[in-house]
Length: 250
Ligand SMILES: Nc1nc2c(ncn2[C@@H]2O[C@H](COP(=O)(O)OP(=O)(O)OP(=O)(O)O)[C@@H](O)[C@H]2O)c(=O)[nH]1
Ligand SMILES: [Mg+2]
Image 1 (tube, rainbow, N blue to C red):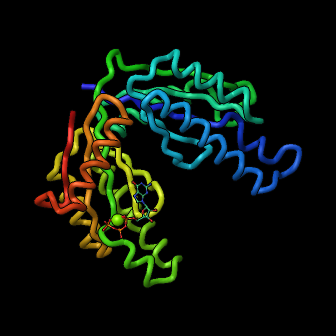
Image 2 (cartoon, helix red, strand yellow; image 1 turned 120 degrees about the horizontal axis):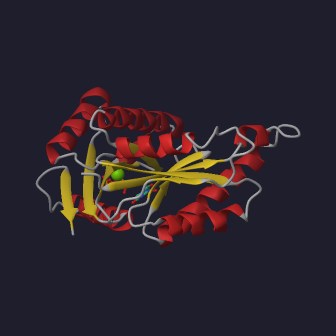
């Protein structure tokens, strides 16, 4: 059953804009991208959604519970405030991979990311009811030991390798993984079982020697699912759990 709703947010005609009339300063582009991300995170989180920065010119949001009108309001608010506009494609799916695929296809059908004519478009399909969001919050055990012992760039490399390993393992289960900073990774993972996650964690440990724990939250909106996942992690940290994975649902 389709219970997940994801929104692809894409900056309109951004490539050409970055070099017109001449290449813009990198720092200026970074300020724009982070301000836009911050504004969108504010708008989505006010409505119990959450935005993942992805590649910043394209972001993905969990939008369960957000209607067409909510999306229109967010577009109106953001598109008046920045020197660029964004378009949105909304998709639903049984899994996160399927929902992002539908969101992507929907947006791609309205024109190219490099089209001058496509501006502030909103397209896609919406869940008829709130549905369900499953979020896994992965966190490295005792990462402070790494941070305090090794050059920062070597720690960074290991955390990025762990990211890629999580991405690949979870994609085989049609789940998406995003790096959230520090030693934190969040996965949208509707349909994955505790046994799946145990296998993923064991694989990362076997290949990289990095040990993870994961708190999993299941709820009808992203905010609640993420909160439950964080609470589940907290239980593992306090030694209240049997293993490295705890599920919590409302
Ligand atoms: N995005 C995000 N970052 C966090 C969160 N909690 C901690 N961090 C960051 O992650 C880094 C590592 O924190 P911890 O995971 O608590 O440290 P640790 O040494 O790995 O400790 P344990 O996980 O308890 O074994 C910190 O520097 C924080 O900046 C969170 O909930 N979300
Ligand atoms: Mg940690």
